[in-house]
Image (tube, rainbow, N blue to C red):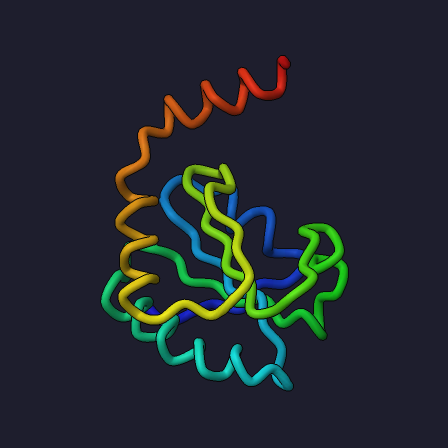
Length: 121
C-alpha cells in the first residue's frame, strides 16, 4: 500500500481508525525528510496492513501547530486511535521496523488504563 497524503480534513478520521497509522510530518525543502521518504515508502510496501500517511507541514501548518511539530521529519504512530509514539528525526529502516514491532506488540487495554490513570492524577 502506498503512502497516503493527509490533510486537515482527513487527519482525525484517519488516525482514529482501528489498527496502526504511521504519520510522517515533512516538507519539500527538508533534506532529512527526503532521505527518510524512501524508507517510509518501503515500509508501506512491506507492511500494507499499516496505514502510512504523510502530512506536508507547509501545506497544512494548522496540523503542525495542533500537534506541536517543531522539527521535521517527525514521526507519529497511532494505534486504535491513540497516539503511542511521537519523535522528531529520520529513522533508519531497521529502527522503523523495530518501532513497528513495538507498536504491534502493545497491549492497548494496558495503554488505555495508563492514560486514564495519568489523566485522573
